[in-house]
Structures are given as C-alpha cells and as structure tokens.
Image (cartoon, rainbow, N blue to C red; front, side, top):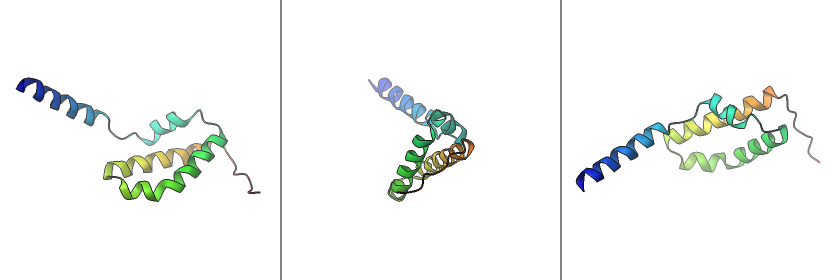
Length: 87
C-alpha cells in the first residue's frame, strides 16, 4: 500500500513538471488557424480579463499569460489584421 502511494506521488510530480508553460511559438501554433475576427475577439476578451487573471495567478501563471498575449499580438500583426472602426 505504501509503495502505491509513493508511486502515485511520483507520477503526479512528473506529470506536473511535464505540463510546463507553453512558449510564444507554441501558443502561436495553437491560435494560427483563427481568422482576424477570432484573434480580435480573443485579444479583446483577454484584455478585459487580464487584471483579474494577473491578480490571482502564480509566477508560472503570469508567464503563461504573458506568452499567450504576446502570441496573440504577434499573429494579429503577421496576418495584417486591422481593427474595425467602432459604430
């Protein structure tokens, strides 16, 4: 029984370390198929929730958020998307 608990703890620790933060390029690949309108919506939603997410995030979580936001901005510029004028 003790062996099973130790094995379970080691397995969970390995899984936690293997699920490390995504890089900007990995986030870019994740969102690369979004059209300009989808990117714009995602960026707007991200900007509205950013302060709340940063206040509750750990150091690792903050780096994840930063990488995701940078990837969205990079894709938006690469696709040469232009924001629509508000009505």
